[in-house]
Structures are given as structure tokens and as C-alpha cells.
Image (tube, rainbow, N blue to C red; front, side):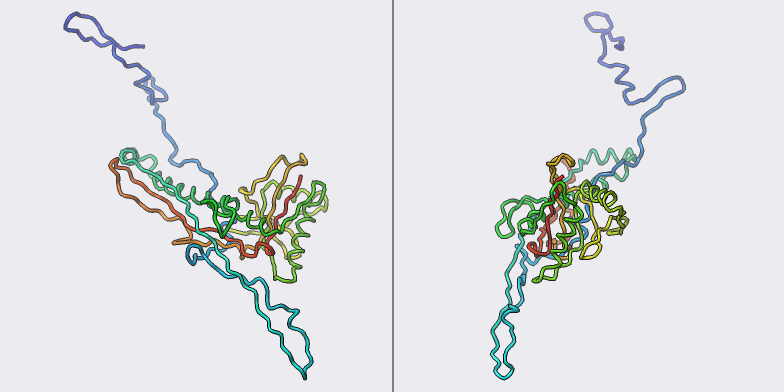
Length: 339
């Protein structure tokens, strides 16, 4: 419906239309009527259950980097026990032995994110006083975005080498463990539980290294298959234990003790479970031997930039560091489950 305004043109007298409608007038009102004028209101809390962290990043070691790259030494063998043999006590000839040590390094990587606050929008929000905490929430969400990227890349970073980096991402833990060579596949008809227990037993039985794995990480779908197998095949309900504040997981009894079965959504799988062509990975890890080497601070830091000509507040979240799997060839295991 078009409103008309009485306006006399200088050259003739007639009514001319204005470009305004009733819709323009009450577009923000939910209802208008006699004695009633309803305007939209919102809850002051924003519904939010977005993922922000994973337990893996909280459970591995956080250590300061020694530099770029961050360097350390690994002893791969004690002096050869075979060389330290028995001799005639009246004619002692001692063999010369030497420990075997190698130099290792991990190049540091950077994760950044930026959020801009327009001055007009900030003042408008302050004047409305409806979402008073919104700027702080957006800042926290920016940091959380950095941490989600970090948590996913801890496992799945696409770099391929610690000594000669090929990408700007982390060299993911899954790739480092796979490169160590400890990998086993469990066939579609084989027991998942037996396969995991066998892999743990082989790790513990290593006569060259004192290996004591501390956890098994897998996608929740695979852990559900393990739980079902225990109930169906063995009539056993797995015990639970708390691994972080308020987070309880199932425990699997192994030769290394009861290991927590920790679900991690960032460990993806291929195919459709039950089709016979799906591959679901699990990782038996010694968490004390997986380190994150950080620079500056183990958590993201926020830097405020100067106001540009557009009067926009600019904040940049920065995190420097990289993960390294120590003893990738003997202290950890990759288990690929076919289903």
C-alpha cells in the first residue's frame, strides 16, 4: 500500500506518491494492534556448543623450544650388552663400548587468526546493551579457533618431515607414528580387542626399550565397536576412569595395565563401518614421549594492532610451536581396523 502526501508541485496541483510502505514502518515489530506493540527481544546468552579442544593436546607434554628448530638428543641403544662379556678373572681384557646417540630436531610452525572490531558496531552494541559480553566472547572464540586448528593438526598436520619441512603445517602425530614403522592391520573378521592387546604386548615385550604405553586414541565410532565386541563376545562391560576434569572414558585391560580408550573426533576414518571396506585407525601411544615444543607461550597470545584509517580495532591471535613423537619406532603403535 502506498502512502500519499499532499504536496503541490509548482507547475500543477496534484498528489505525488512517497516511496514508503507500511512494511518499512513496522518491519522490526512482531505485532502491532490496539493496546499492543510487540518488538523482538533475544536471550542475552548465545547458544554455543562448538568444539573448542581435545584431550590429546591437554595430555601430552608441553615444553619450551630450545630454538628454531628445537633440538634434542636420543639414545637409541646402551653400550652393546654382547660386548660386555664374561672374562677370565686372572686375565681381564675389557672390550671398549660406546653408547649410540643421535641428534633430533623439530621445526617450529605458526598458527594465526585475526578479528576486527568496527568502531561504529562497537558503539552501537554498547548503546543497545543487549549483548554486553559479545566482544569478549568473539575474542575467546578467535583463540578457540586457533586451538581447534592446533588440535586437528596435532594428529593430521600434512608436513612430511621433521628435518626438511615441506609445508607450513605440523608434521602430524599420525604420520610420525606411521613413519616409525610400527603398524598392524586387523582384518574385517578378526577381533579388534585381541588385535589391540597383541600390539600392546609386543610393545611391552621389546627387549631394547622400556616401553609402557599410556593410552589408546581412536574415533568414537571405533571405540563403540570395541565396546560392543566386549559385551557380545566376552559378556564384559568395560570399567571407566576419569582422564581430565569431568571426562570419563572406558578402560581396556592390557599387558601394560588398564589403558584408557580416549575418543578423539579429529581421528577420521574411511568408508562405512560394516561394509567391509572401512578402515578405522587407533593409536597406542606413550603420552610422555609426545611433546609440543612451544615458543613464547604454550597458549595463543593476543596482539592488538593500531587503529587504521577505518577506525577498526584489530586483534591477532598467534601460536608458535610444533609436536614431536619421540621413539616413534618403538614407543607407539598404529592399528588399522578393517570393518
